[in-house]
Image (cartoon, rainbow, N blue to C red; front, side):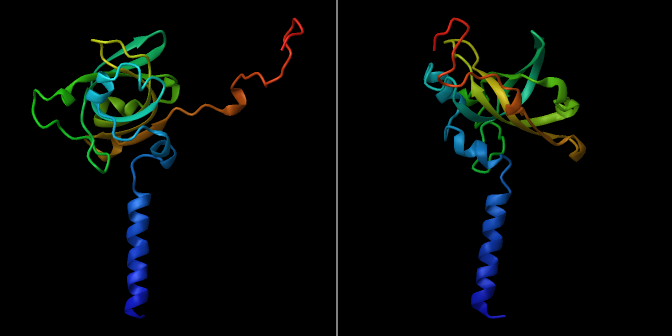
Length: 176
């Protein structure tokens, strides 16, 4: 085998590893707002409302409200490989808090209570000044103290069960 073909193989292998080992599915990487941090989320009022963001964190509290699981998170800034890290100092604003709402918790993994850190992809709910931001969880990857606790979860909604009204449909009163 020539050096040229060996270099090609090594390049393709490195490319596959770089693209294929992301902890986040590519569909979320494409849709998510790039470079969002907790402080940028808190400081821009409603700019991010309804947008997909990616944050890291650790669960500090959980509540059940209206049948939904609410996880109170302490933020862990993400590195370039989307791994949650401790903030640079204990007083750093990136060490703040946010809430994550798990909509369909029926298939949410029980191992989440053992997760030491989480990678959260969520849609930003309305931001209230002075309050912790709230994300509607779309995808999460949790890492536990043991490999058996590591798990990923996605809030999948079957499109066959979404209610929608086709454009141009006529209602009961005969109006469009």
